[in-house]
Length: 186
Image (cartoon, rainbow, N blue to C red; front, side, top):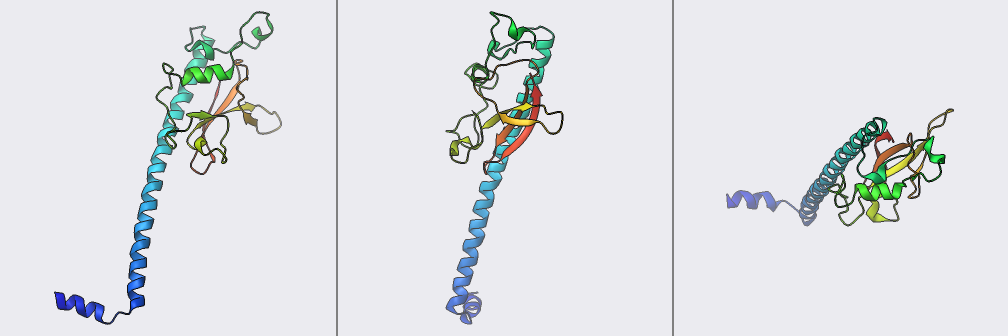
């Protein structure tokens, strides 16, 4: 067997050895990067599943509101369009609602940023300059436009929660592009 190996390498030049080493290095690098991308893809899929659970939760919230059932957390209770002008009525804001949802005893406390564990679970927008927003949930306000597609804008922290508010939930992926998960109405 030793003679067979020697005869295999006898006719090779140094450039052939360099090519074989470069080929092995490329195979290793492609395998390593492919495995990393596969892991990130699994994390994005798990985050999308969490986002779909959020949309289902908001759907239940909307039906509870219509049936006049108690809503938890109280900070997420929207106010009727008609009631918002009544003096003394408390109007909840988005910032308080989203903080209550992701707080220690909130319904989404276990939902974290799977791509960047140090990053926030939710962000105002997907920002390439803020690297920690990769993997964060993005809530956007949808303004219905009768002449075409809805206008999309970031959901500001001071946004008042009024019933009928259309919201789109997206996920900021590894390339800092939005992956649309779904839409819901308060």
